[in-house]
Amino acid sequence: MKDYKAYFIIPAPPQEVFAALTNPATMQLWTGEPAIMSIEEGSEFSLWDGSIEGKNISFESGKKIVQEWYFGEQDDASIVTLILHDHKQGTSAELRHSNIPNESFQDIVEGWHDVYFASLIDFYS
Image (cartoon, rainbow, N blue to C red; front, side, top):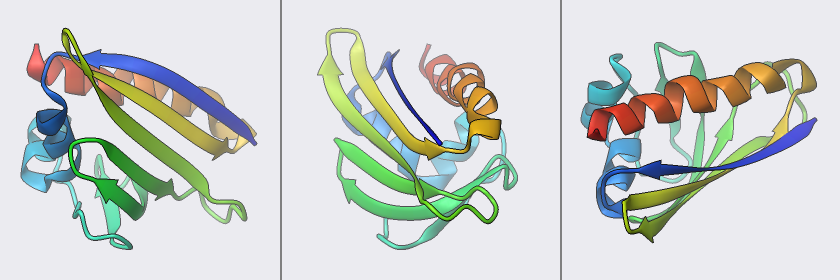
């Protein structure tokens, strides 16, 4: 199991970025796929036609999202924490993803950079 941490600058205020990460209609705009998402703690979510699935653990409006991402039959929960900070160019998104299965690590890191945050940044650019 591996952990990963990164920062991304998104050219929009934190409250807008939070909405883009939690509102299914907005998510569909930047992912290009229907999204299942809710800010109800304990609810399950699905993005990119099921390629990312998990459970929402907690939310702090405009500031923080904590999710469990599913990886097959994995015993330890893989936890994604996104913390949104004000930044002069919009939002600094702090990503922490823990307990990533070794065999998935490279794909997950590339996915965060090349798909997830690239699509979100593109949406606001």
